[in-house]
Length: 285
Figure 1 (cartoon, helix red, strand yellow):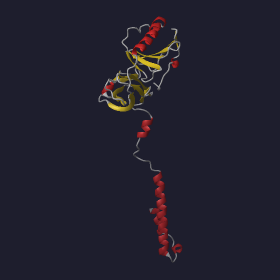
Figure 2 (cartoon, rainbow, N blue to C red; figure 1 turned 180 degrees about the horizontal axis):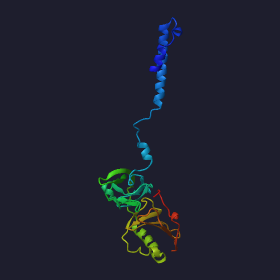
Figure 3 (cartoon, helix red, strand yellow; figure 1 turned 135 degrees about the vertical axis):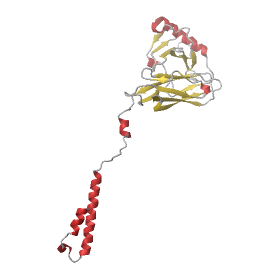
Figure 4 (cartoon, rainbow, N blue to C red; figure 1 turned 30 degrees about the vertical axis):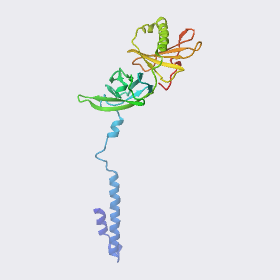
């Protein structure tokens, strides 16, 4: 600005002429505009001194190898049950390449559901957890919510790096327990064949099973689940007279995501293995 002002004040009088005062004003306005333009140009070249790096740091991954990069996936988020019935949810830990350490699980549910979490810690080596329910006789007829919370914590003070909450629904309907005797008969027919023909499943007798209706309220084809500490066994059978009284079996090892074996029994007693995908699943669970 000093340079422009000196230039204006030292302009020849021949240029200023008679309207010297007006000309001086005009020149000073011209100088001011030049100065303003120059200042704006200089501002564009100034680099900010304090830049928030939060977004850029979050994009390059966790700074601590125990941090974040995980989510919990439920195989299904809704089941149907009844007072004195049962049910099971299966969840899995999915993690990114930068993840290590543990994810700590906890649940919050109405006491009458008797919800149980089979393990409280998931990691890369053990990434499957199960929540079982055994609604008691006093369980209210409505849809109940089970809140599953997963937290990744590290350090001596257990600082929380990331957390997730999943809501699981249990629809309790007003229905009786069903005919367990027929379900046991169908189960035992299939178990006898398993033990004699499929040697990898040779120890299914004399297990302490917890039975419940998988899909309460469905009668034409009844579905039952039998749980013990190692296996989830599902049985379904057609409630008809021969030759339409077939039955099926589905096996999933506890702690695994998918079933591993299925079989079908015809009315004449013939039993054979079938693809797991041929076992009928209702309501997506």
